[in-house]
Image (cartoon, rainbow, N blue to C red):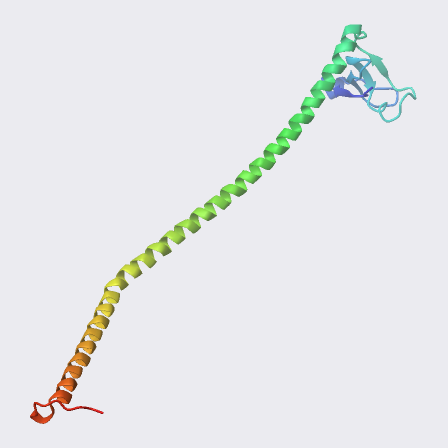
Length: 176
């Protein structure tokens, strides 16, 4: 059986009632299983020390049997829903925090992708600028090799002619 009650004061401070002990009398609402929703007046000091001559009085008649049956169950369901709502709000906060973190990471990655794209363009431009020079180098290399091969072939021809026809003599000379 829960012992929950709430207080409300609608009177101005000068019109408020005082208890014998000097404490103010407040209007409360009981939310216990035996007296759900039933209002009463009590000295604010009576909550600290029960009894001892403090003012306490019911303002409403007792709750009917059906109300005593239904209200506690409804209150339990309401409290359970409030607890669920708190959990959902905490989970929502966690998800929002994760979303913010993911959005920050996304922005960082988009920035990195942009930087990598710039680097790629610079490398492609440099590579395109180097191709004509590479082509020239290969062309010069092939030309040099071709000329070298031609020179070697010419020297072989001259050498073979010299060995075949030495000093104007048309007879073949044998080499040992």
